[in-house]
Image (cartoon, rainbow over all chains, first blue to last red; front, top):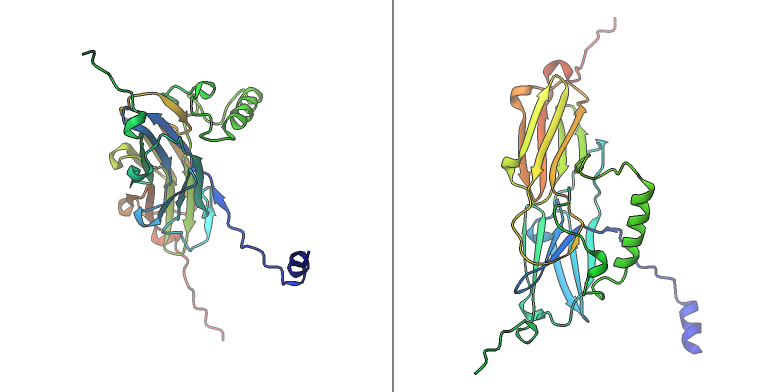
Length: 123
Length: 150
């Protein structure tokens, strides 16, 4: 009860609203695991942030050079890219690899050795 | 143009994106409603385009991630700038779970807001953004006229 009162009297602090855009993605699977290809035009290597927590993979991309002059015509956005994926538990999170080339972020999600298909020879 | 098979209902990774099936439902509803889709094999894809202008130059930016600089074609006819290109599908093996990316050809043409020096046009491709720098022709630049007031 006291908690509620406290909260009411405390100055309302609103988290700063951060607008993000959802980047388009292709996902495919190969012998090693899954591969994500995420389009983040305008983002360089230093602008990419990848976190993995509670089975969720969060990909964030900050645009590096946002033009300062006024646009005559504009279709692009200044907002950061952000997309969250629930990861298959068979992915070996310690071996996740990522690279970015010309705004295309490639994330490799290898499956744990135990989860890979295996051929068992008959003795 | 989609060259990768898209099998939203067959995904064994259902927990991958909880909203995926809902989104697919909406997508299919909109595709039905829209007989002439904005994107598709007939129209190709449309990378986002920005045009900036100041006193000296016009700058055009085109967002097209994951291309090679040889795959762009830029031409200028009078005041009309055409940017075209093709994004090729790279060889990939295995099953596809989601294909939202567009591949194939695109072409965008627009009229520049001022005359430019055609021989001084430069283009760079960095971080998936094609930037075209077009210096304005001298006659298109604003002139400062001094008028003697007597």
